[in-house]
Length: 214
Ligand code: B12
Image (cartoon, rainbow, N blue to C red):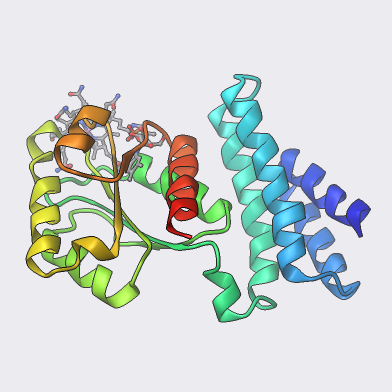
């Protein structure tokens, strides 16, 4: 079993989406538990990718290619994991704040979070405080992420936090923020629970917040 999972992990690190898909199917056919394939195969591979990226030995494009391979494996697993197992690692709702149409960075964050086995609801761009609040009610996420690229729209973040407080939803979620003009200091000012400067740091941040929640 370990060998089969190692093969999946290796193929993922090489960004071989088709191979990851086939190996995942074979592992399922061989009766290996879907959660074991996720944790010891796919996530193991993403961990290697994360380490390599931080060590500057690969580029963001390589991370995205590996992430695509991760998706290929996850798609196979989806039908075999129960609904509760699928959101076992946590759910994140994320969007770009009202008035802001930038979504390249946010999409990278979404891709990486999904790639690390999290359930992500992407609200898209130009999301106003009311929509964020409604999404917290509807999807009951563990974490709410806000992305902003325009300095002129930074004020939307405290507005969203206020809207959540007004509806008594603030304590239900951890808030994370990111985007060009966002800094750690700003995140502390608006009483967010965390800030990340890039997509990989966002994965670490979400994992550590989920860990604290347990
Ligand atoms: C591409 C781009 C556009 C595209 C957007 C396409 C799209 N679909 O996103 C278009 C052409 C539409 C555009 C329009 C405008 N843009 Co523009 N745009 C950019 C540009 C060149 C790149 C942004 C980008 O994608 N970066 C790459 C990504 C990967 O990086 P990132 O967004 O920072 O995301 C990473 C992190 O921040 C973090 N992150 C991001 N979100 C989140 C969320 C969470 C929760 C977490 C934890 C982490 C996280 O992780 C990401 C991945 O690693 C920047 C310049 C720049 N160099 O940044 C200007 C820039 C952002 N734009 C700018 C401006 C002014 C505009 C316009 C107002 C221009 C105009 N006069 O029309 C309009 C605004 C439109 C609107 N209402 O939003 C300014 C903003 C200045 C400011 N500080 O306010 C910039 C900085 C250019 C400049 N130097 O003047 N833009």
